[in-house]
Amino acid sequence: MPDPKTAGNSGAVRALQRIIDGRGIRLSIAELSDEVAPGDPTWHRDARAAAALSRWEAATPPRFRDAEATIPDVIAWADAALSDPSSAGALLLTGPTGTGKTYQGYGALRRVAAGGPAQYEVVALNSADMYGGLRPTREVGASERELRRLSQVPFLFLDDLGTSKVSEWTEEVTYRLINYRYNHVLPTVITSNLPARDDTGPDLSDFVGARVASRLAEMVTTLVPVIGADRRRGAA
Image 1 (tube, rainbow, N blue to C red):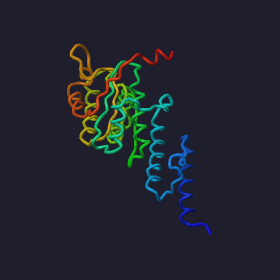
Image 2: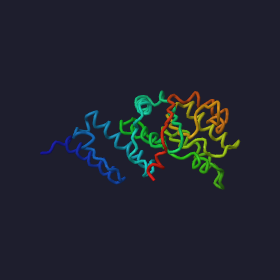
Image 3: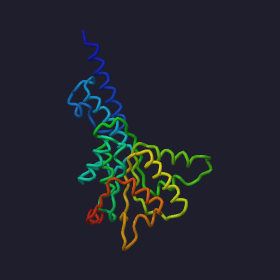
Image 4: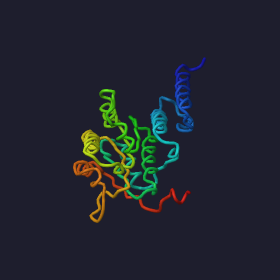
């Protein structure tokens, strides 16, 4: 007679694999776990990794589905965010257009997901799209609900900060978002084409405002300048 415990474990594995397959994720639980049983702690970590990678892929544009963190400081931030999200702070990637900032940002979040975090929800969006989604609409409270969602999500990726036209409204929205995530120690990945500070020309503080810049200075634990040629031109 089959062992009920073994049969139950096999059923759990099959159920989890069906969920992953249904979401279009090219991932095998057997490959992740090396056939360990669900009672083994390794299996639980691998199951969490499978679920987290599914959420990461759902939040990631197709162009960046192969993203991988390769810069040592980016890898170190991702490992810290996996080990203790409350101590990770923000990762700020700066540099000219096309140097791979967005790729590294998605790669960092993928590395966190692959580690099997206890909790993993992620929202990734361009700053221009964020402001567009937060503008007041006829639906009462919709923009506030969206701001709350972005403020509270366990992992947030805000791409291209500093490219939108500055106004009192954008500065207020950005401050509320950054201030909430700072106060609640939530890991955040930010990219910008502008340097964090430049005494000879425009920098990020000129575009986000003094209040936001001050909060970012406290929030960012890892600043990574990404330099090099424009990869998009090279690929054209």
